[in-house]
Image (cartoon, rainbow, N blue to C red):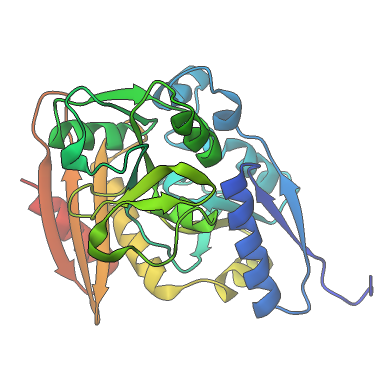
Length: 320
């Protein structure tokens, strides 16, 4: 290597197929934006990857990990000790309040935020038989499904996206599963173009499975869903500027508002919150659904504005 060339940016990522696809997208964006700066990839196994023996909602409590840190703790340790320069995250895994040693530097252009219902029979939400078992590890998805269809049953389902699809195709203990559209798209398992009339679509490489993209108004997505977040050390200006070079400003406005709304709620990984945002011209539109306890109906609200922080606050005050 030319001694005058800048050192490669060291990228840290989890090792799942989806995480690796996201890291590849980051590396390609960096290569295009900063042609003279190479990258090196480090794969890091996190607490959430290792503890598959218990429901995901219980991992943080068992391991003593703050908030949603089950999928970021080891990546932040690598940032802290200088082993990596940029940690690549599925943004919905990142806590709303970070340790002062780190900062969220940027996000790539956001993918679609919807949830997807995957079945073996091509059913829609209304067509699932009473008592059907829905597999998910998300507390939010579980609460939203049972709010819409209290006659269904939710079963805990862990594993990466290909593992979950294989379990469903193999007749595992569920009749349907819920996944993020963004992950299916990044893995090439779903067509970039939605089928006409919102009908179930085939899942690529799984001929027995069908996917139905669910409107955000039906199942409110998680804050940050569909976004790839780039975390750096707070004092590392070089890596911060590199991340900014590939950041997407409209996506940043949206995730800033959604994460601020979670912060105002003091919401952690066990708080079932659905929130999404849209940009219409210079306006930011937001809607939310918050499940306070196991028995009560959710509170909901909406707001619009131009400033992400102010709009998040207006959404918080609109909850009824």
